[in-house]
Every structure is written in C-alpha cells, then in structure tokens.
Image (cartoon, rainbow, N blue to C red; front, side):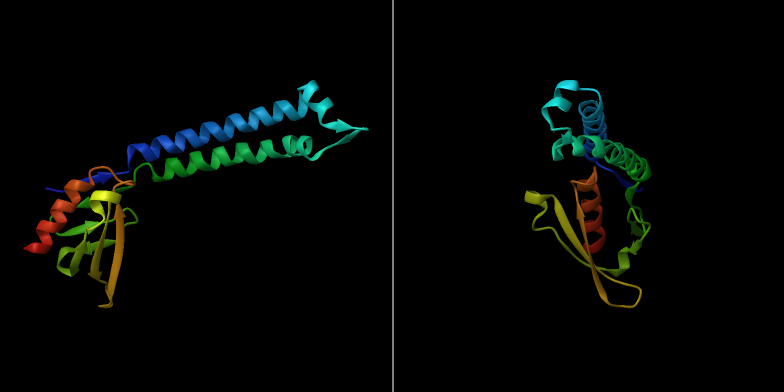
Length: 153
C-alpha cells in the first residue's frame, strides 16, 4: 500500500493569501495614483509628482502581474505529492529513490523542525542527500514511518 504526502494545506492557503495581498495592493495603489484627488494633491508640489505618487502610478501592473504569477505557480504545484510505495520513494519532482539505495535517515530535527534528511546512493554510486520537511507536505509522519521500516529491514 502506497503512502501519499500531498502539498501542505497551509502552503496552499499561503499562496491564496499572497494572491489576495498583491491584488489588493495593486488596486489600492492604482486608486491612490489615479483617482484619489487628495492623495494626488498631497504628493504633487509645483506641478511635479513626488516619488510616492510616481510609485503608486507605476507599481500596480507589477503587483497584479505578481498576483497572476503566484496564481499560476500555485496551480502548477497543486497536484505535487510525495509517494512512498512498496518499492521506492517518488519525490514531487519525479525523482525515484529505490529503498535498496537508502543508506540512512537522519531524523534528529524532525520533532522540533519537522525535517528529516535521507542519504542514498545515486545512479552513479555517489552518496546523495535529500531534505524533506513536513512544512511542505502533509502526512509526512506516515511516510517517515514507512521509510524507517524499509531501511531497518
């Protein structure tokens, strides 16, 4: 039976929060820069716009573009997951690590920081390390338990 660790719910929520913040800031700055007469009058001296007003006029497209970029990234990573099946560990980027190549699991920081490091032999025989954090993935306790059981025999 495979154990699946999907992308953490709090990361998905953080993407939504960033989209909202960037979009609202873009709209707010556009309003202040183009429609808010009091703000425009306050930041215009002798017919010359100060740096604050210039920023409020130039920033909105970049903020809106940032919101769109975060939205696209969130859509792309939405289906990512780590799968620990019977034969191998399949990481979110598609890398497959057979259990036979696992050398060690360092879980000393797992209780405090939620991260563990696996050491394994790469295709060329060199030892490689991967750090996996429960902050990024849900259900990591079950994945770690499966990995420990596979490495200990």
